[in-house]
Structures are given as C-alpha cells and as structure tokens.
Length: 201
Image (cartoon, rainbow, N blue to C red; front, side, top):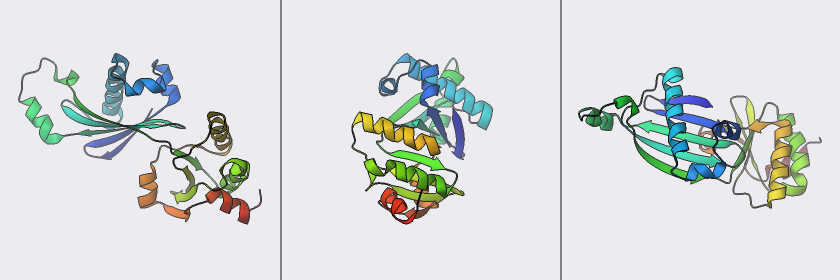
C-alpha cells in the first residue's frame, strides 16, 4: 500500500492486487458494500494517520478507481467544514465515525512506467504483433510511461500484454491526468508502431 498527500485535505492511496488479496478481497468485491471494504478503509485511514498525519473524524469523499493491470487507486478528500459540523454533534467515538460519499470508477486503461527509453523500445517490439496502432508515450520525472486507453482485446491477449509489459517495466501509480498536465508527450498516438519504425530492438 502506497500513500501520497496531494494537498492538506486530500490523499491518494494505491493498492496492488496483492494488497487486496492479503485482506481477502477479490477485484469484484470493491464494487460491493461488504464489511471487508469497510475494514480496508479503516486500515487505510490508520496508515494515513501514521505516515502522513492525515486524520479523518468526519465526512469524507472517497473516489475509487479500479485499474485492471495495476490494482486500485483511492482518492480520499476530507471536508473541513463538514468535519467541524459533525464535531458539534454527540458521537461516542469520533475516531470511528466516518460518513462516506463513495464514487466508483473502473478504467480499462493500462499504464506502465519504464526507467529507460530503451526499455520502451524493447517492449514495443514485443507488443507490435498485438498493439501496433495503440499507445501514448510520456516522459515525467525522468521516467517513461506507456499508456494504452480503452483496449478491447481477448482475455488471453490481455494477460499476454501485461506479462510482456511487466518484463521491462512496472504498473504505474500515476494517473493519465497527471501525465497530461505535468508530463511531456513524446509520442501522442500509435506509440508502439512509431517506436518500432524508428528504433531497432
């Protein structure tokens, strides 16, 4: 589980599928209101308090993004005005009181990060038979990102793509919105085809 403070009242939490499995949560469970999910949220908030001094004792907005290749990203925003209002009411244990407003979203995007451009070139040649016309290549903080949006492929091909990408890079905890705003677009479209055309493996 990785935590990052976005601002005073907002944090981002990234959980891998291994993190979820350790807690007995399947990918499908996150879309259901079950006790395990509430336990997971309490665990996340406890860790956020310990690592980031981010304390929640009132209403929060929770945005959950399921990423098929990476795991799950959770954005937690606490409402300062709402918290003040809740604290005026009587609750036996404010530490355990949360009023959740949950937004769920599932993305078909695949986003992998690579340390070197050569890694992108190598994986592009491996992917070419399956994804020749797809992909956007970014550079951000001296690392390279390959983004594939709204892929429509068979399950067997999908698993193969993830395996190939994992040979040279790793799933990214960044979002495409951060890359679009702060990163540099190197190849806007057809990144796999372009890398294969201009670079040899």
